[in-house]
Length: 246
Image (tube, rainbow, N blue to C red; front, top):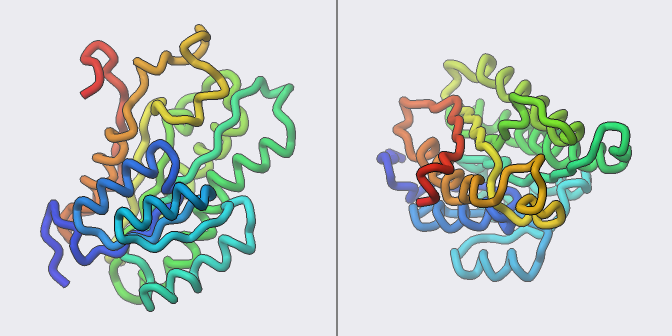
């Protein structure tokens, strides 16, 4: 099918973390563009509400559950009968603690959600995409995957790892027809920050200095909506606090 820039009608998009701060806005933006969506998330009620509103399919589950992740392929095939056109690895887990106070369980949880699950999902669909000669994998990274910050042992390890995985795929997928995109925002104002109360701390950016979730959504939309002959391998987004949010 011929797909024109700025129009996502005909695109089948599998989106993880669909009820999070970025995920919900991104799902709405992709839906506005005409994409057909399968949405993954943990919160059943919020996910079902979003799916009904967007005419999407909801798959409720936790990405720390390897069996659930392994079963996503069959559930998506039940809906579409084939691999998605686009996989967006958006779901994220965040921990903030000094290295010496980071519990192994927390470290493993963050790596599972931020690194293992994107690998597992991409691995599930990549053979189909390669055989078809088309497809697009979008990974949501972080500035913490390029620059080290105190207290980010688990999160940085996961995002540095995901960026390494992305860069391998850039090399492996070149010339195959399958696209790969890395979206790298600075801090984004989402509920992940709620328990850390950044406005009351001097070691964290204030919420007013963070990106709005819509900035990430627009970057993802831009990358997906490019013509088939164009692959956007990386988009780096940084907040511009002096300009305020728009």
